[in-house]
Amino acid sequence: MIYLDNNATTRPAREVLEAMRPWMDEAYGNPSAGYRFGREARKAVEHAREQVAALLGAQPEEIVFTSGGTESNNAAICSALALRPAHRALLTSTVEHSAVAEVVKFQESIGYEARCNPVDSLGRLDLEAWKANLAKGGLAFASLIWANNETGVISPVAEAFALASEQGVYCHSDAVQAAGKIPVRVDDLPLHALSLSAHKLHGPKGVGALWLNRRARFLPQALGGGQEGERRSGTENVPAIVGFGVAASLAARALDSVQAIAVLRDRFECGVIEALPGVEINGDPGRRLPNTSNLYFPGVDGEGLLILLDEAGICCSPGSACSTGQVKPSRIVRAMGHSSARARASVRFSLSRFTSGEEVDAAAAAVVRAVGKLRVVLPGR
Image 1 (cartoon, rainbow, N blue to C red):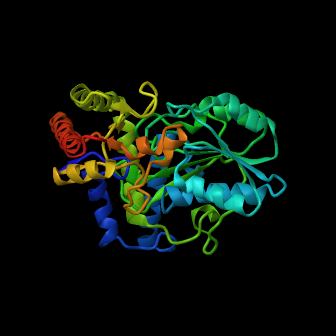
Image 2 (cartoon, one colour):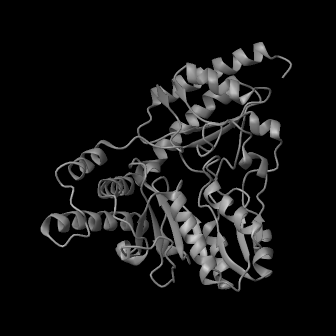
């Protein structure tokens, strides 16, 4: 198997698994307990909090552990709305992850005004439209994805949030895909909240974090025992949190080598594009995550291509992994102004720091063979 779907999830690092194991076995104490057995678990949780904070250039007390990026996004948005009841408009982009887009869609159904900022054909945010949306006023929050999960296109977060901050708008970023792949620093931006997920950076599934600016107000969505500084009640998932901390520490150290991943990504693309005339990159080639390649194969049925690649042992996807295995035209590609036909003929390949040169060469050859078969079977397409 050659795994090129790392934007869906990543293989947990060996160091992560080793760090988690004791907390699933003999060190099972409740971190809220007052005796030594519980205090040891609390100490492990707080150390992980420091590790995640360090990845972001944040303070440990600003990190709230959650069940993942979806919960973090929902919590940030719902808190912003609850704390600003007089503001009835929401600003996002047309290329947000569904964990933001669906929340906005629901809020629109109950009376909020949704301002979904457009992007151009390369997936780049229209900053002039963003300024116009801000100028209308009445915004409860602005949420902008740091890097798109399908195309890897990196948003101009510094410029966009600086403009929003001038208007006094609550600012949130979904950095689930960006963190660990490129530098993500909250100390450089006028942000109020930011979302992370461990399994996107070689940590375990089922744990994430919400960074909350210590100067920003927050209304918790989960009430009960008052864990996580009374911002997210519920007994902490100690093994997963410990694993998240180790994964964050490893990711921080690996940021210096991300260019090596980009070199392999480009090598893969060259192998495919040179052998298959007409293949195009979806998204801005010069401003995207170093591991992400979203390719359009004209005249090819994307679902058929995925089936052939699966048979060849290549793991990739049509786009987001959050559609319960359904192959549908990419909402993101269509938001860039492309046709549904192009969206159906596009496939995402995403590498990790564990991907080898031999694997990308073999994967490129497999893609070329699979597309060749489909073009023979369906020459009219």
